[in-house]
Length: 413
Length: 82
Image 1 (spheres, rainbow over the protein chains, first blue to last red):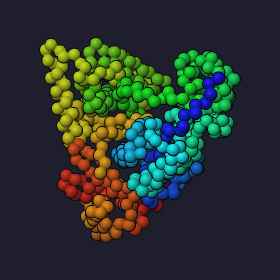
Image 2: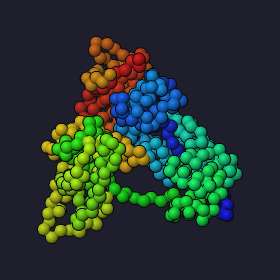
Image 3: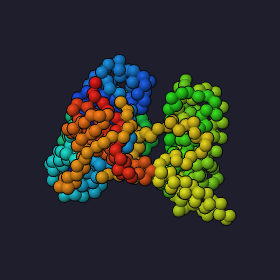
Image 4: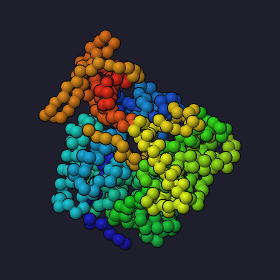
């Protein structure tokens, strides 16, 4: 059996605790020490995105409805999200972390990985670095903000270590203490192991993290039926296999409808706005797409989706909307729609696109670019399709879980 | 409570710390002396840069926005914490 890696713990995982909620408490000192939660909507059915540390202590969890949170904690203060504020703190934190390591990889709006490999640091120094980062966050970003920091020989174990003590932890997993730590964890504590995988592991006699670690490679292959078995074998032994940047694969936007619609005429303005937002981001990043995906979540919990590839690359909002609307009509719309998602895939950089003989593509590209420049200068949707008018107040700005792209337009003083 | 109304603000610039902070708000015929700044962040709307100051004065929270195109202040929000 392969031994646990003796590589020093040079990977640091930093997680801003209860990110959105603590940023709100930083912003408004009157909310500090009180149970608060940031919710997608402040109405009873709104989904709680981030409860504060005080709210978590009272049992409020991410994903609860506002009404459930209020039932557990009647004094819970509910706030709507303020994405520019969170992006600003994210960028300021990224700037601060870049002073410590040349390799800083944001994993989400509130998570960063710092790689200290190749830097001449005695091991203990990373604890000092961790403490200094916490101090500098309080000094330069906000005194109410706390971060949990984990150190490990690979990214996976650094993240596990960051979850060992919350809030404000600073923990390490290495070849000396991994066995004790594994014994204290359950399978769902491991990032990437959900209830379905827990059940599958249990069906093969793997009930604990220690069992998982001790499992042989053939045993793991039989559980996962893929290369993932080998990846878990290495991950749990401290070997790095997660430092791969897969690059941008798609652009998408999703929206939970406040009012559930069944008619295509009612869904069209919302779809148009989703497409406008998505295609603006696609073009701003210099991409075109040859594939389109449309997903509908019906009110009864069933899901309809369709993906289609096209012969030509799409980039103009109108073209993408026409394609997306024809996919919408394919669905048949048998039930009211609760959630609408659209995404563009099979991407290619603008520079790699074949020129057309009659120049129509380049003219369309120039028109899209001119419209984008006007919207960039005077604000999003200053110029927008007339059919989108009824959706002006819908599809507000949001931060997706794990999505930290498109931050370049924001500035730090 | 969302307000979104023009407001008079006295601010100061500290060249040593390189910081600007609002000091006093005159709104609705009353004067509020700012005691602390929770967060100062920025965002853009088109090309216009806005500076947002989340401040507290006398147990009242104010969210103030400075439009850097015209240097006008706006009171976005007020909250007495109750």
